[in-house]
Image (cartoon, rainbow, N blue to C red; front, side, top):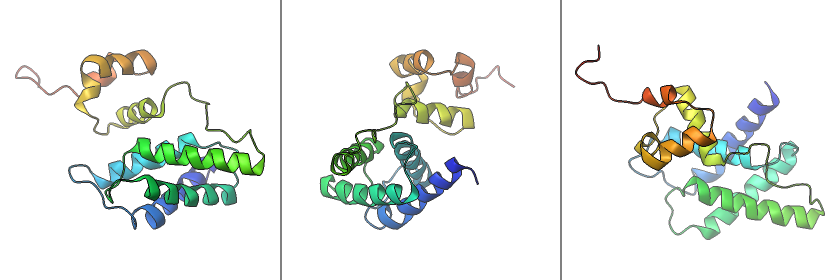
Length: 161
């Protein structure tokens, strides 16, 4: 397994043990899609230099912080996970005297764009927001996606075969 695969497996394991036991999945969304969005978002937000033990510690503390900040026991959105993880990461870096442990900035595009771009490339479902108007414009201008990539989501018309 690659380093990326090991890390994703570690985050998935944490999600299964810590998050699925604390929160129920929201209705109207595929649980696998929700979990994947959160797992990929957290992975992208954490420094790649963390050891397995540091990652376990930060994930564990992030779950506690998330539960403390949550308004319900329904799975919070990705943004809430990233906020909680950022708070824990900042506290950890300050207490450990490691100011170099900051959220990953290797990507110039925000996490939500990276996730959506990856979903388009994988042919997975995306929100209608990303197919029209401002959402489409943002994807086209801030990612490597093209009109052809997004047109795959266009519903067939009577003239299509």
